[in-house]
Each structure stands twice: as structure tokens, then as C-alpha cells.
Image (cartoon, rainbow, N blue to C red; front, side):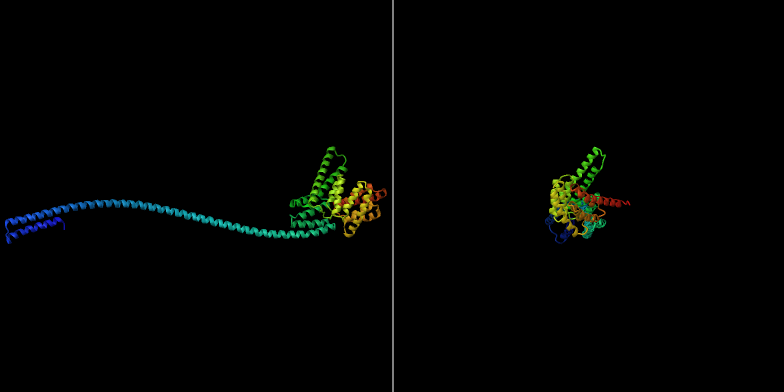
Length: 440
């Protein structure tokens, strides 16, 4: 109950008590005044208290209002702060969402790149595997073909020794189809072409063999022989051609010397690599070098080269026959005849031991003419002519050149027999040349 209500009730009670006291007790005036004074005093005190209470209440209400206002502002501030916080939280959430989306996108990109790289590497591995398998298959096929090509070489050798140059070339060309990189096959084809007189074809195959195998001595020596033969062709043109101007003759001499020098360099290179090197006929390549020196008039060097031949192939008449010719050119007649006696023995053995040995019969023919055994020489000559391959004018031409060199140094009674042999060989060469050209 509020203070002013208490004060009002108290005053009402006093008013009611006053007649009661007057009627019942009839106090004296002094006592009544005292009681009234006391009541008034109490009422004043109560009023003062009521006023105090009202002041305190007002102050409390003021403070409460202030607090309510402060609370309101605090609430507003808190609301504003909350709103700001919410905005910041919302913004942060958006940022986080954006970052999350970016991370997800980046992760997807990384995954995509990773999958792409994995797929690319797998594809490369598949391609590598396929390539390796194909390479292995190809290598196996190449190896098989190379083995087959090498297995065909002995057949080509047998055909060559039988004088079947066409068959020999067919066999070697088939081997070349199986193994195009084989330097031995190229060298063998080059050798057959040389014997056939196809010097350009021989040159091409020898050069290819050397490209495949730089220090392949048989190809180097064969190419040297080709250059020697080319130089000899130019030399013959100088001898047999009349009416050449001085400048034209000089040019041909320079060309001949260039070819001979090239031949010498290649032959020396081959013989340095393999001093005991022999050709497909089993003869020492020192003989080809000796023939070059002999052609250039370097008889001392030619003599040393043919001595090397006799050391490499002592069972062959080839070296001794050329030594005898050199002794003849040096006017050492006795030594020449002694050497030709040795040539006759070795050549007779060669001819009897190997059927179809042209060089054996050729050397036997020359030795017998040199020794004055004309009748026996005439028996050997037809064999030599018949054994010379139809496709190889070189062999008979070599025999013809040797007999022409021998003719000036033999006695007159022997010379007529050699002249007849030269005529027979020349006629045979002419007939074969006409046959190759298709002239009847």
C-alpha cells in the first residue's frame, strides 16, 4: 500500500476516536490536547515519511526511466551491433562460400588436369608399348631377313665361280632386298659389276658399302680398283686418240692422274687396315696396287707390291706371274725365266685342282709362251678363253695385255705364237662385244 493511503486512513481513525474518547472517558482538556498533539506529530512524521517515500519513489522511477532509456539505447546499440555483426557474419559467410566455391573449382580443375595428365601418360605408355612391340617385331623380322641374306651369300659365290654372273647378281640382289643395309652384299655386287665392266654400277655399290661401314677394307680396295680401271680407260684414250689438242690432252692427263691417285689412296687405306686382304677370287689386293704402280711406270714400287702378293698367297701363280713381267721390264731375263718356271708349276696345279679356274689357265698360258712351250701354251689358251665369263671382258682383256707386254722380250721364234694368241683373244673379245650389243 502506498504511503499517502496510510496517512489518510490514520487521519480518519483519529477523527472517529475523538467523540469516542469524549463520550466514554471524558478526559481532561490537557490530555486531549496532548493526544491531539501526539497524533498530529505522528501524522506529520508519517507525512514526512510519505513525502520522503514519494521522493525516493520518484527518484527510483527517474533512475528506472534512465535505466530503461539506457537499456533502450543499449538494446538499440546491441541491435545495431548485432546487425553489423550479422552483416559481417553474412559477408564473411559469403566470402567463405566464395572461397569454398573457388577451392572446389580449383580442385575440380586440378582433378581434371590430373586425370588429363594420367590419361596422356597412359596413352604415351600405350603408344610406347605399341612402338616397342612393333620395334621388337620389326627387329626380329630384320634379323631374320639379315640371316637369310647372309645365308644366300655362299650360293652367290658358287654361281660366281661357275662364271654365272647373271645368276650371281640375281642372288645378291635378292639378298639386298632382304637386308638393304648389309655392306657385304653391296661389296659383293660391286665386285661382280667390276668384272662385268660396269664401273659406274660397281662404284655406286662400293660407296654405299663404305657409307654403311667406314673402314670396310674389301669395299675400300674394290673402289680403289674401280678408280684404277677408270684411270686406265682415260690412259687408253690418250694413246688411241689422235688429233687431240694440247689443252684437251693435258686435261685428260690430269684426269688420269687424279683417278690413279684416288685409286692408290683407297688401296693403301684398305691394305693398312688388312694387310693380308684378298678379293673374291682369292687373290691379294697387293696385286691391284702393284698393277697400278706398273701402269704408272713405278716398277720398283710395283715389284715390292707383288712380293707382298707372293707372301700373302704363296700358292697362287698371280703374284709370281707379275713378278716375272717386272723382271722382264728390268731386262733381268734369267730371273724372269726362273720365275715363269715357278708360275707354270703353280698354275698347272691350280688349273687341275679347281675346275673352271680361269686365272690358273691364263697364267699357265703366259708362262708356257714365255718359256717357249708354244704347243703346250696353245692347248691351255682355249681353256682360258672358254672359262672367261661372257659377261666379263675384263678377264680376257687382262690376259691380252699380259701377252702384249711379253711379246717384245721373247725370242723371235716364240713371238709368232704369242701373236697368234693375241689375235685369237682379240677376235673373241670383238665377237662377245658384238653379241652384248645385239649385233649379228
